[in-house]
Image 1: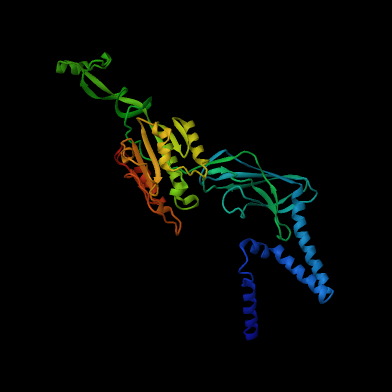
Image 2: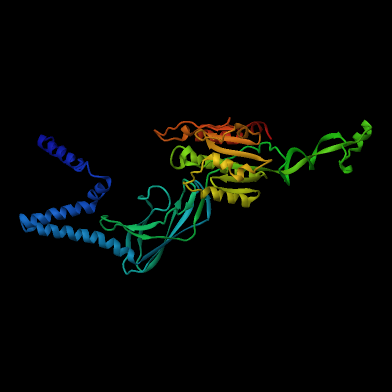
Length: 427
């Protein structure tokens, strides 16, 4: 190792020069151009040209070399993509967050030379500048197929933006871009968690079905007996008990009916905290999706309402797909506050069923807590501070006593599975 003090000072000076910011007052946009490889080469070319004009003619040789490298670094990527067409497709049309999906990129090169250093950027979430998939080359006058495993971390409809095929070969001075056609789309559902049984649904809005409920009806199993009342069917008379008590006794049957549930999602970004897949808004969407999917699979009729839109209550697998598709495509700009959603005709006109409102502790419930505390309305409240980024603080809102209070993402699985009385002790 060289311990010469002069050498050590030169190395320290070189490090300072290499890391020093020579333009601290320039804007970010100007700095991006100045520190770009093309900007550096342009400055080097201009400096060598001035040297050739005022110092020595050899400066023109250096200027010509810089110009040749710059021209080749810009022209070659552009020419490489002129004869290349690309299309991306997925091996399925629907998936959930975290699922591994096979993405296929088909490349067709019509040029007599290969295209090197190809990459697909944009359209799949994440940093737009980061490559989604790298491709070694597109062979000359051939069609190539590239596959990779795409694991979406957040719900949405993919590609979110038109992807692009890029290359900066050979020097990486400038990336040429060409649009990639999307053959079909991938709908990524929000992740769902197991939920507990359906809470008791008050009122008379029950539709016939095959779901046995702990409620008196006309078509289920025998729940008990009671004295005869005028209008009871003679076929329900229990003749043995009637003879024993010397009066008519009838059987009470269980109700075979589908409970009707409306899930109201507060999608207003102003009451949520955090960014990305771990934000309170994304977790509120997952909570709503979990209730909808779980209770639909238990046989209930479930509807969904959010800022300005709604899906009427229905049952079956088609309704599961409809609700999850709607939540997957939920846009970021839904600024309608919860009070307006609950005061709208869809929520105000919902009667004789269970209404579950999913919101945060920053939301302001509508005035008149009599409507808020109604027996047929349950409040699922996410504590926004548990999902917030550093420095993200806001004053709490006003809402009734929560049915479920979810403090963080780690608490959600246990609370959704057994956070209420019927879930802990059975329905």
